[in-house]
Image 1 (tube, one colour):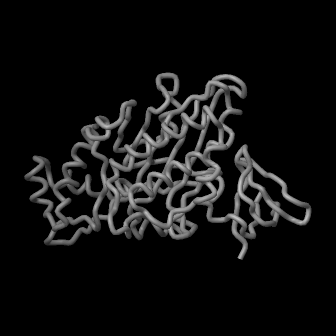
Image 2: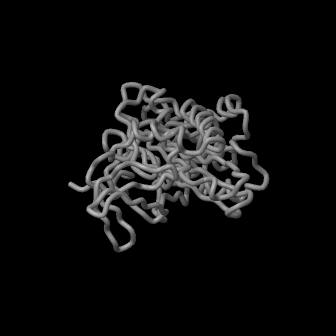
Image 3: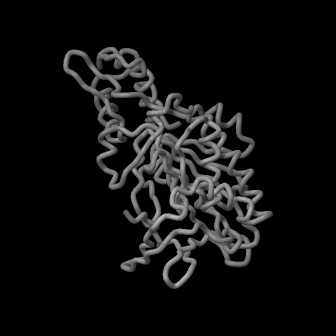
Length: 320
């Protein structure tokens, strides 16, 4: 942890009680000036942390933060785990260091300054509010071996959430996770290498834990988070379970392909047998969604029969 974040963590720890704490008290406790406290508070707000500031009373967190227990995370995972308060992108970190990693190594951050979703969308990543996680994997037979991988990752996430007692979870092709028909989590898979030889792959997952009002206003689609659950999962436990489930499922996928996962996908698929449209650039194709084939392609039934579609630039939307 950098000295800059060490100070900020100390301030957040003092504010964790949920009560107002004066700037004078914070300065005395941390052994710094009140100006330094004010500067740190301003910086924390820029990272997306909602802090009340009331003259004569001091500072107070609006809501609570969910931070990873770094030592517990590293003790529970056999692979290497890189943990940061702040990083541009967990996916970018994994890709940059791919030559030093082995399958199953992960990168976790509390804040991403350049978080990304599919098709170049910005993934809103306020500090300590959600889960930002990337995992490295290598396919020795090349990119072709990864066909359908995004569906497997979605199945892994659903399995873990259900293990933790989350009900109402479903999937939308190719890898969006929904809770009560609103988006809860997204997956961004990136790779480099050759079509028919070793390729490095990173699986990035963003999952909403507790969305604040100021961040919700930046999202242009219906969203959900875990804050309304009767029992909100511990973020560290969620990470550990995700890493282990992904490792288990990816190993099976390497050995057997998509076939073992088709029923798991079908059980969670929110769009099965529904009228949909496929958005491909400026084109739209309408039909009845009939699930996915052995390569993970969308099967769409229209007057022309059942046809399959696959590609990173395709978006599936429900009609009506």
